[in-house]
Length: 293
View (cartoon, rainbow, N blue to C red):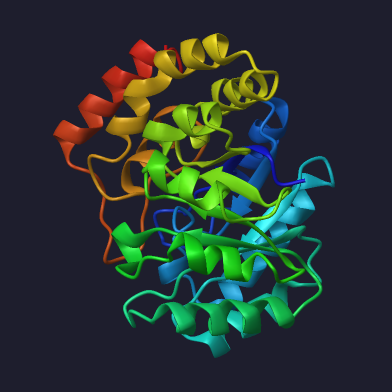
């Protein structure tokens, strides 16, 4: 279920700061039409850090509604408080989602044993499957392969989003986890290499802008056509870098606004609109990548 290209979807907003549900519906339809294999709603790219629980849950509920069962939806439910992560998970469990993406608790810097206790408690809270999410560039704490392997024995912990960008880390994890444990790249720049080395898919920021190319790259890798996967990745590799010259999701939101997919590039404070120089750069890269005429 959790293989292929899953988009780490932005949460569109009006200039007033309110959630732009018409644009959200349009984006979900855009991903269905362009072959994305799934949606991650209200993760880091969806500005989970600045959405109160009520909005977080409603955006997930609406995303499922707009998907109409045509594409699986995973909900971001991470928090640096285990109690809050459990609350979010239980509140969203009946929305129609297919599972959760749960990030390593940030700021607290938990020990490896603390991570194990945290994720087991989150997994025990509902009947839905859980994908772990390791992104030490944001959380500071780094979940080690041995910890992932210990958690993989839990029947509801089914996979990992690895955003380290380190292919040697993938290989370490592969050697420790059971067959069938899903390994997804959370780093677009190394996503194709991750697939080439046995990864099962991506949870991608670039897929916001280039969903067709990302899904086709994953399909090619699944079919063992690595040459085609690399060719597709080469066409959009500029996006992998350009979208991150300012903190995510600043430029993905600007890019989608320029593509006419949303009504605004608004971000909630403390994030602010991208610099003019960054906007010009991403537009140039979008044109060279073929996603903007």
